[in-house]
Image (cartoon, rainbow, N blue to C red):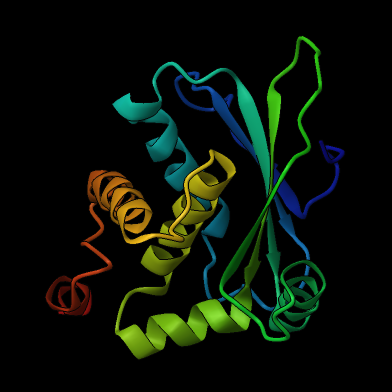
Length: 183
């Protein structure tokens, strides 16, 4: 966990009702200043997922959210996925096999600032909503969900839609609802 004197990171878990998920948020690269309340938005997304009945029996766990840029994400995407281009979010599961009394390390999520902003603009959705959606999406990957098959995609999208609705965010997979964000 980052030193508490590091003004670039926030930690979740102690400010609200205790939940099983703790998040470390690090401003790694990029200009995320267009989302001034990004720490609170990310914490709210994590808390919404942790409060979901689907995950009520989850053991204490932690994840790191790195706010980065397209160049960094492009490099990571090329190195680990063989895709030489930026993407909106990458999830890296922590290696298993640890047996200690602390929270389980789920892994790291890396977000690409320019791609996240461009997608929100192209889709006509609020940047804050897109950020929260991608945090939930990344956390679901760390929890073992995927979207390689149609059935997996439907399950994962259904969970995302349910959690986002709890945050008052319209279904990001419905063009009609996405357009309502700006009206």
